[in-house]
Length: 184
Image (cartoon, rainbow, N blue to C red; front, side, top):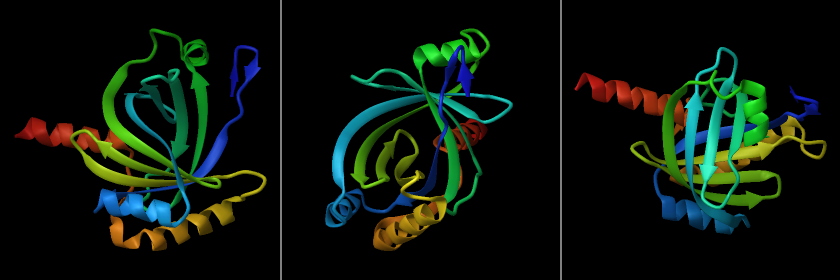
């Protein structure tokens, strides 16, 4: 992606998300596999509707605003995600300040655990529940196939604490909740 004169390199990961049965047991499992908890943060993601791809603005206390532009399939199995992270200035240069319309907001408390090229997110999402997300970063050292294998291994190791796989983003789940509540 080119923003102004700057080329921003897209990144890729293999990701998997599921409902979480037991947050404390997931923390214990993270420790058992040797993952390090590197942050516990409150994140507010504002989603925007685009004709191509997905876009969210992430705000977290003490961190610069970042915009995440991504493409991925809505599948409950591990899937490839292509994403680009932009600064606030880069995003405003790319999309302007008035052309974007906010769609909805998702707030969560996220624990970020790291194990080599894998991020394990333990998310308590307001109004939606508790989830676990595995993201294996694709790189020269870790190809797509290896990342799929790493995610498969994590799914096995975390099996007792994982509930139903989730195919949708938190924004899609929040939209479903809003629609259900509007019918009540």
